[in-house]
Image (cartoon, rainbow, N blue to C red):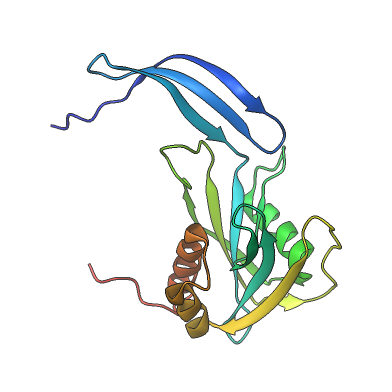
Length: 189
């Protein structure tokens, strides 16, 4: 039998709350009677991470500036689920079109996970999109200047392994998408 048990939430207050993030300070009691306060929880909207593959199984990646690290990063396309969005596939199709001007023939939800269960209350949904092709210009958004880059599946894996793809969660989505598409072998076992 496991000794790992849930904590009791005694109270909670918001330190910050707006449309982008909520920072909650919880007061918790462990099963051993230890009070932990404050325990900070970050509340973000759920978001989607997209693994887009064209007819030749090339992967569409995006480059964009990221303020937190102060540099341009290489990532899979991604975006937040707006209030009222309840279908990650719809959000993925919208974000792919807005950011890259592309659409896909098939969209498949392949995973829903927590970005960091210790601190984040939201979920991230990984969506595999196949048959991707460009049909329009991306939406012009001065807050989000994005450059698209097509690479082979093998090159995408190399970029992740070399550290050129820097976002851990994006690497996980990329690998899950490539495994689902049969372009990468899952680890044995």
